[in-house]
Length: 361
Image (cartoon, rainbow, N blue to C red; front, side, top):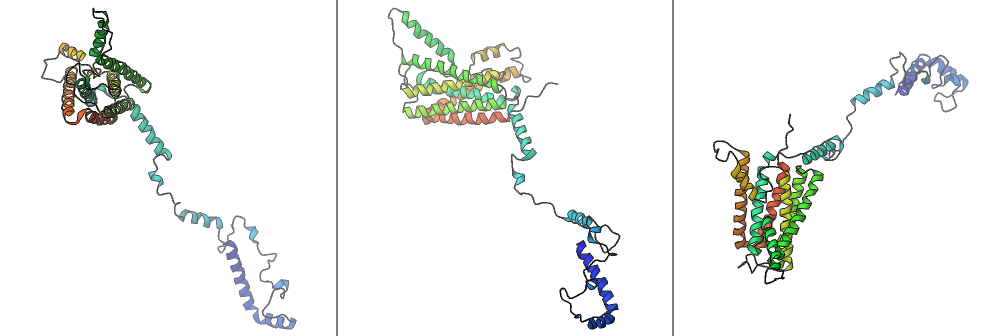
């Protein structure tokens, strides 16, 4: 732009000079034989319109785009600065704001999610999922006891049953047979221990964190689903006629008992690690004893957590057993366990929304 303005100014000055001396120059040119319309090489050096004389400034005399005081010479840098301030902002990707993992926002979101999952739950505000645990104890036990008279959650009875089976070896009849009921009790005890051992994995993640409580309950869900599929494929019945005639006898029924007992073992240790009034959520003998020993048992004018939560655990387990047995008569063992799978899936999601335990000041 500076060069163009400078050339225009030179042409304007030359034009004025030419008009002033037009007539004298015309006569002189004619006398010298120079054409009025010049062509390249036809003009002498002193008549070159684009020649630079000694007294005229050169373009290089104004570095940086011209800084002289002449108003006709525009500062190139100033013009560029003015243009840069008026340019629109650069076009951004309209989808960038919806990118979850991009930039600082994505890092902040991941940090919040990690903190939420690894935070310890407040045991006093986890009444609902723990009551659902107790419900599932009665629900699962109703299925196995109705079919084979074995408790998947109450391992006290199974342990005593194995003791009785061992004692038969020393009576006068010397009964060395391994009864089907004893086999099923042993299967339940061993898989219950295995499930409880899996619960020790929660010590690595934090036994009270939302992540472990949700993940552990989801593992229970998978075990219950596997039990439902196994008993469905076994084509066995749902309710036994008598104690010496169990409804489940084939191999797949043992698989079903094993998965259900493992799920209850995992639930028991997870409930115990929450350290609440619900204790393990699978045994009510201790709960009954502690309830009867509560000093505020008959203080009905106020809420007592140590008493009320134990009552909720007992009622939830009773409802689970009642509803489970009612479903057996209508949809069978496989269908009942399928519903139990859905309930446990809901509980696994439920743990993610239990309030966080507040730090003590």
